[in-house]
Amino acid sequence: MITKEVVEHVAWLARIKLSEEEKEKFARQLSKILEYFNMISNVDTSNVEPTFHVVELHNVFRDDEEKESLPQEVVLKSARESEDGFVKAPRIL
Amino acid sequence: MHLNSLTCHELVEMIKAQTVTAEEVVEHVFRRISEVEGKINAFISTFNESALDKAREIDEKIRRGESVGLLAGIPVAVKDNICTRGKLTTCGSKMLSNYIPPYNATVIEKIEAAGGIIIGKTNMDEFAMGNSTETSFFGCTRNPWDITRVPGGSSGGSAAALASDETILALGSDTGGSVRCPASFCSVVGLKPTYGLVSRYGLVSYANSLEQIGPMAKDVLDCAMLFTVIAGHDPRDGTSVPRRPCDYTKALNDEIKGVKVGVLKEFFAVGLDERVEKSVLNAVGILEDLGATCDGASISYLEYAVPTYYLIAMSEASSNLARFDGLRYGFTAKCEGDWNEVFSTTRGEGFGGEVKRRVLLGTFALSAGYYDRYYLKALKVRTLIKREFEKALSKFDVLVAPTMPILPFKIGEVIDDPLAMYMMDIDTVPVNLAGVPSISVPCGFVDGLPVGLQVIGGFFDEEMVLKVAYAFQEHTKFNLKKPEI
Image 1 (cartoon, rainbow over the protein chains, first blue to last red):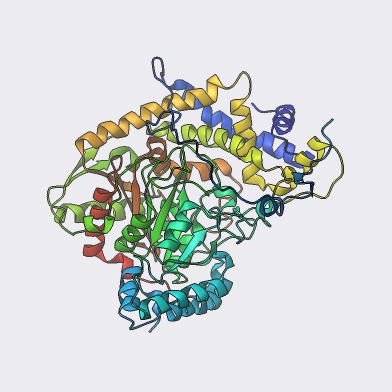
Image 2: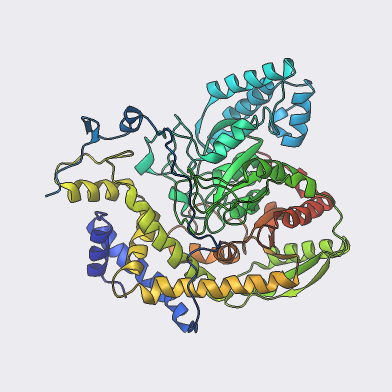
């Protein structure tokens, strides 16, 4: 069961501001969805390893060579605000 | 002649022989777009000028006798979650509604190097989350076979553009069926490649362990041509698999005598529209007539595929979409305040309902106290489902099933019931959990609405998948039927 308080907590963790109406709607919808998802607890998975990735690739290395990267001014063009070559963010503390 | 209604393999020959010019082909495509876009809404943006410039360059090269690539002069429509340098890439979201990437995805570089011409970016469910293209910030795309119905999704714009002859080739991406579902609903061909075969560099991530960029086309040969161009190892994608380059068009012949076809029993169970079932079983009969041996095959745990898929996809989404802060690029809400306030407000206004649902539930599944019960559990069930496919594919060359259990539904009919939407993905998501390749090929019509046959193959056995789809197409020719718009 996902209550409105759980939705509020999770929305805070995900940094998504919700309206009161959204909180109630998502509590209702997510409860129903999660109730259905709970069926996976019926599967016996003892001694089964999780699959994070289907392809067996481990430690993909490349040579440590210097390559051209995107010019700073091109990248900063997309930013909301920039100053002295940095992306400017709102105050954190 | 309406050049826009022809296929890539027909047009490339004509362009190279100089019986038509690439410029004419591009002009025909844009004329068609201006005629039908008002009804279809397949594109988020189109690039008339740059496409015509590129076409003239190709024509000039051909006139000078220089070598041109496999896709010389061919218009390609690209799903709007694939980065195109200097050109809007929105992911169908308000969050990226102003985003202009400073770089190209690897697949775009490959297509352009092969002479393909990017004509525009196609509509999609927001961040590829959906199977109807209804969750796009830019409005729903309509199904060319019946404009009151959805085109499928999330690559609905690409499929609708093909079906309505607004392009010659298209790219989609498939996380849980997003290439195959719209291909089925719009009666075109769409391939979900083996995980790792096509570079994801420049594809905006939704659920990175599941998704692949896939070719979409009007017939199987065109699909194989585009796939040949985009497949291949890319050092810029850490999950890209080193393989020898392959010309997949060489695999196509209509000789499938002795090919072992497994008919996936569980995929014909509850929830399947009887009319779709009849159409797909008829397709199985045709494969038998062509000399394939068809037997029942089984995938246990199928009933767990939807919750398993969604728990993994939502968890990965919650992590992948954390990057959208509105500071470095993309939409920013107009508000004052500290980091958390600006960040949360931007995301609250920038994301639509389905994206919020998935990020919230994914965050929940990964949060303290629930990680083992949901996320880790789903990854273990994934192992079991993957093993089922490996087992079945050790006995059969390919497995067949319906692509979608239902016919294209009415716009607005299901959108308010998210769980009902998720359940429709029952036949497509298991394939992404396993990572194997799968194609959807047109297999008939019910009351004028398309049905798709899904052909699933073993890891890296796209050649077999394409070959079976090609043989089926050559003996049925459903690909030649066009909608009246």
